[in-house]
Image (tube, rainbow, N blue to C red; front, top):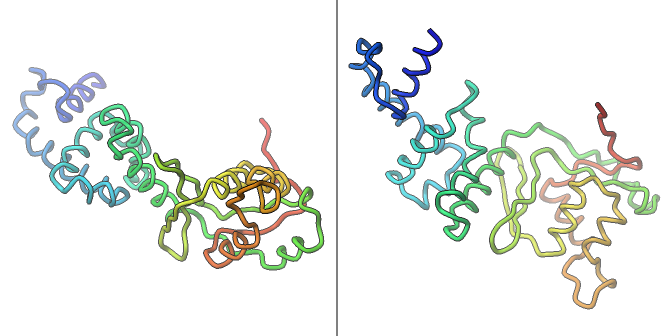
Length: 231
């Protein structure tokens, strides 16, 4: 029975012809397949809005069906389907096409919008004025990510219920990636070449902190390193 089910799935996805044992279901295969085609485009179009706009509905639908056949959903929640699209496009279209960039950005925004709520721990900000940076760790909100792009990097986060993004300078990129790697504030500042420590710095911590508070990047300040779960 399991072999027959797999054969039906393979035929449904167009990977092979329907075996003789499935002749009874063969008449329904085109209808099932058309429904899956439509579902693949609909499901993939939810997170990948920029990619869909760039390709157009017809080409995007073709991409969605090809991706579904190569990487079918593994969970019932189709909102979790699409994480492999970046590598799928890299293999088939190449980085220079710009399509992997769009897929990376779209998926990061989708993940940010699905991230857990986390309010700013306002009282923890007082630590910035009382504790040396070597003993401070800045905790960023869930869903925030630095996304690689061909011409640099983009920051992605959730503000309210909407995913937002902006380009990052080289210094901002190094600083944000350091924070996401759970290094202390002193090490993060050193990685960004903070003002006064490099001939042409492009990072200002004061300006960054103001933006982090205005745009809801920061979750809080800690005086101890993040705890790690060991196996």
